[in-house]
View 1 (cartoon, rainbow, N blue to C red):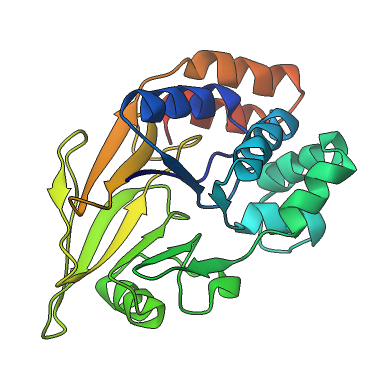
View 2 (cartoon, rainbow, N blue to C red; view 1 turned 60 degrees about the vertical axis):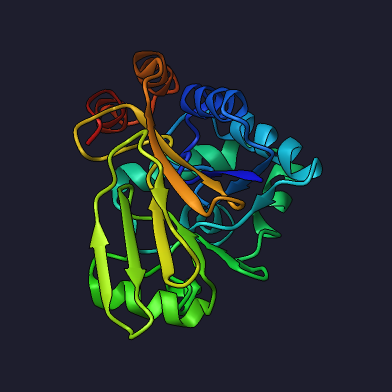
Length: 246
């Protein structure tokens, strides 16, 4: 089975639709959304509606920190990020808010773990930005394959049978063997707001039969997404980041 792994959509409907079409064309049979459905972008309502429909059809969705912020006000977001959360809170209907509030923080299956941030205390929203942070998440997950987002970057960590932790940056479009005699932690990147100066949307496909993961960068109409942010009256900074991939 091929699983599509999409994280950090951030209310970017153009990027989401493009990635979903690409995943379907490449044989995806299951969809997993790894949190931060809202925030930063202008299309919170439409984005949540699309993902809720996938959830009703069997997709798995976990909660991100921006999703939580719709329900619980936080003090750690900057002004433009909080502005986008306020916009989401204003435009989402009650069904959408209830959907976000009811999402789990972490889901473990037989061999797989899905979490927005780290499997080690997922409610803390810790970043996987080092080998030590990756080790904590891998060892807490206790699964062969763990999939996360949150850092808006694509990276693959692995732990050998003797406990050694390593990492490498994947080449988009190149399948990577991820056999379960090791443990793996894949950061699948951000659909709606990559931050490596490349505006193309980022997501990944995991083939459970072959045990291989392929990371992708998919061009989409990021200018349209930025224009909608401006038309909504949100911060120019948010539009600029979508256009420039920063």
